Length: 71
Image (cartoon, rainbow, N blue to C red; front, side):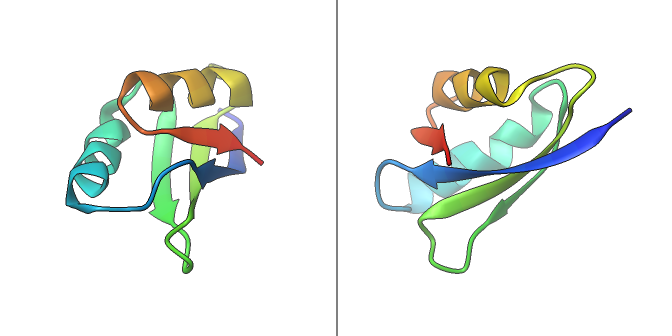
């Protein structure tokens, strides 16, 4: 397993519903950890690079209802 961390910019303000979607995203295959940045405008996502690329993570986050783009 090769762990990689990438920062993603949230495309809408963080609210309770989005926080729940982020919490639920921990169950996405290959995503190990998601940390909300101190500004509440970005996410630090740790994932298994042997299974996913940053573009795959971005697509999975968006499919989970989290509007985020890789920085």
